[in-house]
Length: 335
Image 1 (cartoon, one colour):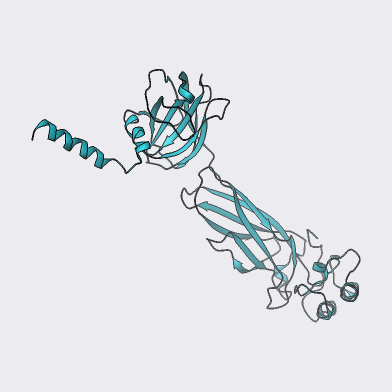
Image 2 (cartoon, helix red, strand yellow):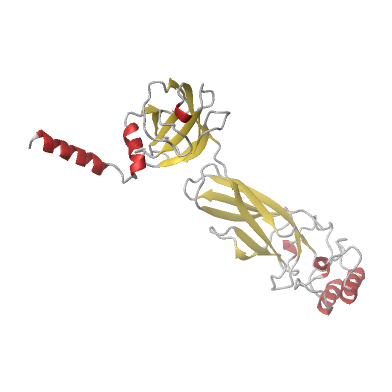
């Protein structure tokens, strides 16, 4: 084989070894061949004065002159990569191991210098490019450090209290919903773990109605029945719903909690016992559409979104001791 054909073979083999990339990024692949290996938690100083290049980053303008670094993290974490403190207008980019795909880019973060945060996977090699905006060159300081990767979780609930349920029913329920406020690692999807933290004097937890699974960002749960006194806090303590969220891509987690109360069924005025007054207030709301200081939620004892004769009858039966219980030592919190 003559030298001409041998050169063609070598060039072909190199091309086959590279990932499929667009023509605009092929220059980055070759420019990054001599990338300097760096470690996390250290500081690196240098100058772009002797650097060369032909391609621009996505966030820069004419930032073709840049220095390349290679970084392979030993743990999957969020990293802050910074050029703050450099002497010129910088751009900063992170690429995949070939330099073919730009993952993130920053122009101005700390005045005219650059800084970015990105989740990196253990054992994967990444290329970091420090360059100058609009052809600028100068001295730079590059730092790489891990930052807390905890997911910032938001948890809401559609109401902060509910009545006990009638026996065998689940109409008195609440729904908690979780959201991701911030995730340093930018997971694409998450798994959820839902649980209750019960008051010290409660042994029966609310009943799951809907959601609450590992893929559910909500949980609807119903209060225990009025025939289950172990599901009600006699001392007026709060119940807590807790969710732990785990990133499916990187495994970082976050937790959130929110409190709620459960009231004695029929204790319309929340004075710790059900009596004639409660029955009368329900009757007033049914007949007149209102009762002093009370809402539909207070008087809707069977939780069917309407106050009527049935609600008055249930309240009367509780007062008379025919169903459920009719008193506790402390009022329901959040009412």
